[in-house]
Image 1 (cartoon, one colour):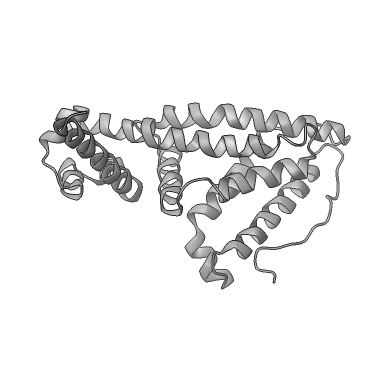
Image 2 (cartoon, rainbow, N blue to C red):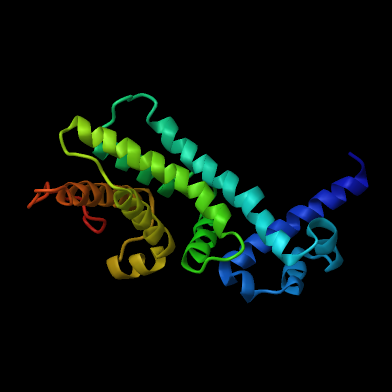
Length: 228
């Protein structure tokens, strides 16, 4: 690759870096091409050259950054279950929560990842189909896995609402960590994150059991996020 090609590739990566950060913080309609190019330290013609339009740049952020990151997170979950072909519901939930909270990506990238997803899920835009097409198969597989593991324990099958509830908790805590830190007085570190994993796991196991037909009282659990 010649020097010119390397410069063009570097400019393209800077544009994607800047666009991902700004789109995550302000949303698609909240920024301009000029803001992106200013942050990327290049001229506006570079956006037209590499992406043709702001819309295409936005979609490329999802195609080349968000989707591959989602796939890595999902793979980390499936890899964690390889040693146990018949996992319990608690183990399934624990591993999925850990996969999303201990994702194999940098912390700052993970925050941007969830911000981008939350914006599209809350107010569907240009990338909504890309997000749902990436998340939906995983949620279907998770619901099926939980259903099979529950059936093994005589607990019945879990609905998609159960899988969505688990995903929603993870997304909430990932996005609201500053509020959680202020309310609980807990810094986000390895210890508190592990307690959060325990809390979401226990809460979800009890919640899923309590929603089964004929269930009047779910299994009791502990391990709240703010406990010592």
